[in-house]
Image (tube, rainbow, N blue to C red):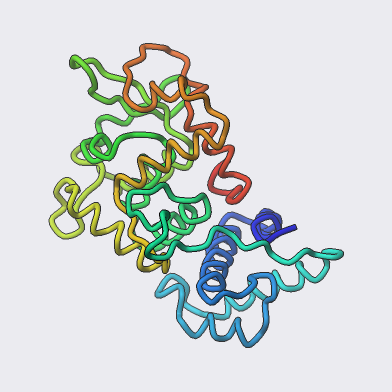
Amino acid sequence: MDFPQLAAEFVSRASEGGARRTARQVLGAWERWCRRMGSDPLALDPTAVQAFLSTDPFGRTYRHMERAQTVLDQFRSAVSKVAGPSPGSPGPSAATPGTPAADADAPLEPAMLIWLLDTAEMTDKQTLGLLLLVAVNGLGVGEALSLDIEHLASTGGLSVVRLPRRWGRRSVVPLAAATATALTQCTGGRSEGPLLRALDTGERLSPAEAAARLTAISAAVGLDRRVTPAALEQTFVSLALSAGVPISALSHALGEVDSRADHSRHPAFAVCSYLASQDPLRFV
């Protein structure tokens, strides 16, 4: 078993939601640090762990580093109990300048997206909502930024957004559970107005600020590439195709108006199932 599999199994055994969330964030940050250092995240060398903790990877999210230390100690014990564990296969490595993947508009690999989601969850709920709306649910960046809280609705027990699209008609787009949860956090108890807001003014999040906040999140993760809003759109298409979604089935998610009442086969659900192998708690 490689690191993502062992980490997912370890996190799933945590006793309650808060503990599972903490374990996922700690192990995600540990994996990112190891990839940057060129080391195996399954080695869990005590010296490396202390070097990792000394970087204060969680900022003010945790009051005590002992919590992170405890998670890593427990994970080390769990790994040691696995008979003949294979070395962690190197996950998607950060792109380096000069390679095709360094294109800022290129799609993100699954692990990179999950790293961005984990970091945004801790530091920037608005960017978390944007990441999920575009990269997981398939909305265009412009559509996501234009959403008002009033566009959120539910139908048949399913969370949806109602988008103005061609010829003034509205397209009902179902929301994956992870996206719906993040958008609830974005509203902050508000009942109207822009869904995604600027940091300082509280006005609608602009394309320029969205790009800047994505750059900041990417830097916090430690990616050796820029991530643009266009990259999120490309990521959705790439993930959907990897999940086995036929190209013909992407037309509705990418903008074609569809009046169907049954949206259970929307590509976002296939994308979530595909991502669940690496992050089973977020993508259920």
